Length: 114
Figure 1 (cartoon, rainbow, N blue to C red):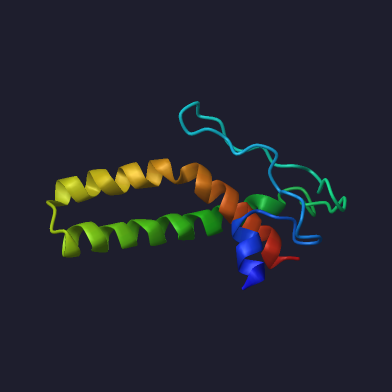
Figure 2: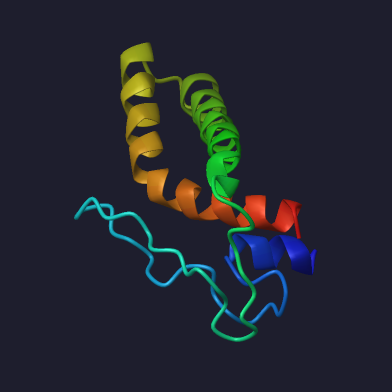
C-alpha cells in the first residue's frame, strides 16, 4: 500500500523521500509540471533512456478514460442529468484533471519499471 501512496504522491521510487517533480504546474496559466532529471535526495535518474516516458501517455489515457466513465455513471445514472450536461461536465473534468493525470501517469510509469 505504501508503494501506491508514494506513486500517487510522486515520490522517488528509490529513496521515497525526494520529489519527482520540481513544480506542480498551473492549469490556469497553461503550464505543465516540471520534472526533475534526478532525485534531489539519492541522485536516482528518472528517465532511463530517451523516449522512456512515451509509455506514460498510455497510462494517462487509461486514467482519463476511467475518470470519464466514472463521471458518466455518476452524472447520468445516479443524478439523472441530460446527455448534453453530462458531456459538458465530463469535458470540464477531463480538462481540469489533465495536469494531475500528467504527473500521476509519469509517476506510475517510473514505478512500473523500478
